[in-house]
Image (tube, rainbow, N blue to C red):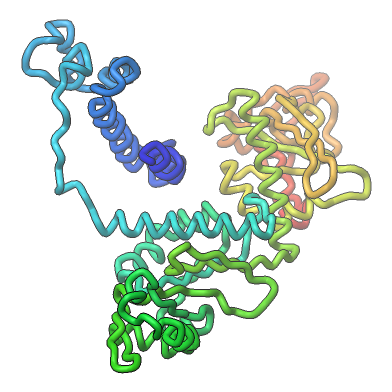
Length: 429
């Protein structure tokens, strides 16, 4: 369970933060420090049970401790401390520090996990790929703590939207629960069997026939009266929420206990489908970047080519320009016909996106020239690095003994995207 919590939740949810892409260097350092100390403490705790693998972990982790530089002066001598000590088996087990436990954060995180897991189950029911977004995720929780609701609507909301690839998240307030779910009650047979005896069958009929409002009132009152007996809602009744909203576009899933229901609006309109195709294209681009060994900071230009008469991918990109700009530092994939003739392809591949074959290419950033530029000027522009001309408003070159002045924004641009925006070469850019 610990490994799942660490890898599938902490590292996964914080992957952009740990890379410095979210919150800046300060947040990245905090996230990495937390991860490091967790790994070190777990390594020390596991050492008596798995001595060899933890020794291997420790030898790598110790290098980041300030006292590591003192190891050469005697790593087995006192004081024993991580880093200086030559072996994990010289270290004492870390002491439990109750002050580090934030129960509110733990409870809110558990609620997040329940919502995400049930949301994923809904997607599986409808066979909706995680790359295809959904319009809205609606959550109904039975008697949630105020701090849980505040956390889900606040700092944790972005994580849920990201993990479920949803556009919106709604937490239904208690006064509107009846519009979404029905609360039903069942007798706890293990406890009530002896107490009710032969009356059990009649009691079951009575309690299961209660309306939503009557069931809510029963829980709020702490129980109900039945033929002179007081039935406690705390341990003698089992409550469960069931989704009751009408509409085929809704799909829901609930926890086994019935205290949380997650409903997803599964409407698949063109906006949703185009966003899904855009994410498929993003995945192809990222795979090409990975195959080239590019870093996150390495900029490229992306061009694609569809079969004649098909513009499925171009239409999808046109509807999701902001998504690509946010993902690729302002770059937007463009139809291949707009690529400069001197553009250098780093890697290309053919993929199936939205049911059609598309050739996707990542290219070195290149300066773009105006349409109809001469061969000599084009050759000169092909030798330029976009970053070197960003601050140059004009450039002078000599061709066949004749000096020519090139103006940025008129004769050349720092990228094809800049050119098409300035010249309105693409209506959707």
